[in-house]
Image (cartoon, rainbow, N blue to C red; front, top):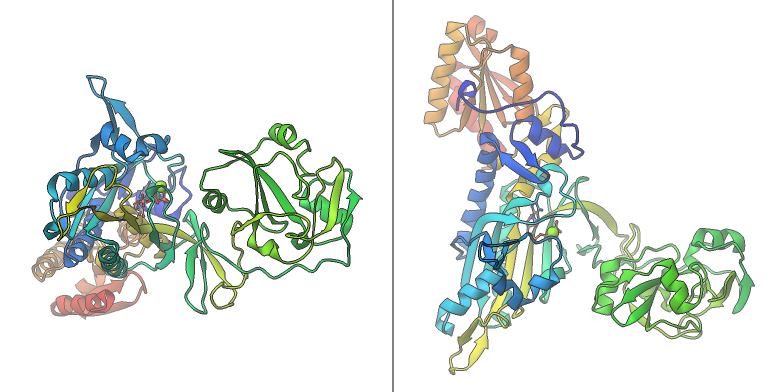
Length: 567
Ligand code: ATP
Ligand code: MG
């Protein structure tokens, strides 16, 4: 491709609203432009990168027996009503009416369409298993579209779905996908970890997320370097060290102005690890008291799992109305007005200070299980340094970008949508489904987050928009221009994808743009060629430079390319 005839609108300045590095660099490198919040145009070079990623995805999906199809973006409401998600999903779904006032929505994901299709097309066990996938546009009215292409309202997703006769067969399909995903992320050159995750709105019985470590991520994972334990913090358990309480006995103390954990600790001269934080939530059966240690944070998803409902934090006036105590003095001992008390596992041992359910008073020396009864659950958000639940090694907590995830759905969609088959005995059974997603744009952005320097992007060979960035330094110099033309022809002929910067621009501008764009190999034809007949070959990542004769260019690019592609 010739730069002079291409749309590659590079910018010197970061876009004003951008925080994530990938957002800044992808806009500055002329890969994408934002049409509206979370809605992006992919410019020609940006599209080349996406297509590279998509090709790798297709190859790996086909290798596990995937069959590509494509499903509509516009869906009738009925299938979503049948699955129950028409009501279960809130503002994230774009809804509209057609001219006949029929409810429609824009597809956020395609479990319903797949189950509908299976209900119509799958008859017998002989038709199973099936692996269906598409690389197609999803529409989600994300609450906070941000970080450039990492979280957009319209985005490309590779989504695949497996149809199996039973759970054992699903396990195999699931493992095939897990392997394919690892190969996809390996080949795309991004660093990632595979973690246990909470299936959330997808439902089902098991799931994993593929997480690319990056400060621009929105998820946290707990990782154990000892045994490899890895889980999303929505799920991860850590074993915290026990707090050491003072020698206290059960009793009430006056704490007139101490409402927060910090205030109570200051007043009583104790550490937060020997206090209990009593949090009131509103659940479907009324107020719920959730207890975590004073130095811990409650994870709302963990509470939701324990309650099998989505509770919301109670307002101060609701606490007073139902429990008869002001916030700050609530505690589990002889509390009234709550339907359930759920305590974090870490409170099974030890004795604590808690609210006394009396204005201006706390209790000390409270022993859970002796002084109050409760249900036990894992509620706290794991903290770095807590012990791994499997091997005891201190855990790390890392910020990550979710680039893919896989779910065992089971029969959650096949039952309501009537996706059944006849088994060998002629009995009707629901199809057992799996669902698997990958975001190609997130892969590209994660690669940028993980691989850049002060000057720009450093693309992995496999997903680089071009492999060679060819620069005739002075295009008006006939000798340089014609040598560059020949090299362009030779490299292209040898199968390399080459971008030739044939613009009549200053050398500095061209070099800056080359660093920004991040093509792995730069080939420069300049004064060195005129004077000594030498062409400069430079690796973008290491900045290593070598000078070779005109005749050696193709072979040298081949050597460097083999090294960079790991082949
Ligand atoms: P998140 O928790 O980040 O919102 P998700 O769990 O909603 O992601 P899925 O519905 O499982 O994501 O989608 C599968 C994949 O699609 C994700 O792993 C991610 O790579 C990509 N993806 C999801 N939402 C977006 C988005 N808003 N913009 C870009 N890519 C996305
Ligand atoms: Mg989401």
